[in-house]
Length: 369
Image 1 (cartoon, rainbow, N blue to C red):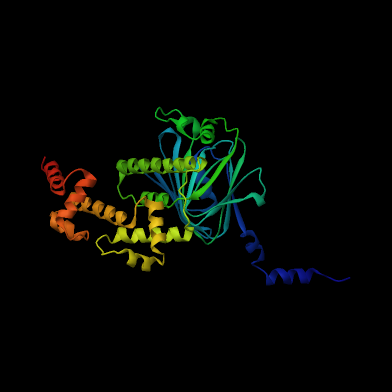
Image 2: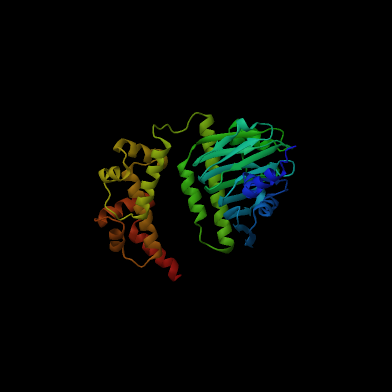
């Protein structure tokens, strides 16, 4: 009789990491919490880290073998929650969310990276990818499950606005009957009898708004109020995009997603260096796009031509200089890249309905008062 025991022992000696590697193929986190706070605490139990609270803003900071980064959440009135991932997972992660106790509508946007989703009744072949810059709306039915899949080794910046329907509909100002009929039914489905999913087109305007949300520097009560206002703005962008899509009113463009990202990068460059002497030819060389594609991209993303966008950001910068610095009007004109004070005064008044000089006087009178 052949003794196989030495062979088995030798295999495990030579492959001491085999079982550990097998266990690290996929980490599953089961969530059955009754709210957003419990959800993050259950994630914390699985990946580690510490939770800190400041003025109602909670942040899970983690630096472990499983993940590095942060997850923050804020609960607002009327059933609105903000959940933001800024994290890299070192293993493939599956989050299984039981919708029996907490089943909001998820308005999700991937600013960086991507993730995937399926409902509990679906198979792995029906997993759908939430791509970068895509607006996605998801909700499960009562007693159902949401499965979210997060890839390992990829930086994730994900914005999720969660709406608890019964609480949200109590707010007097909510005219949900103005929504598209299908989405209206989703909001009124307070007994959670149906699933719903919408995987929308790419929306880079939303990327700019979410980026601004992540850069809010104020503190205390003002910070929370500012964040809440921006959350509602982002929520409205999700809803408007869904309405446009179902009414076949999405902006048509021949540009690829990669080309729209280039246009967005050009706009950020202009925003960061407003005084630079830009020309359409120079921006085309910088971007590698033709003039027609560059103009189309700016019209799709910002509803402006390239020239109109440059003028817009310069005037916004000028307004901030006048409001927040001691520079005189001539210095402001030079700082934003204009050479003619009279031309600047004309377009400033056209935009803000007040001359730069009168605006400065108004600011100074408020300070002295």
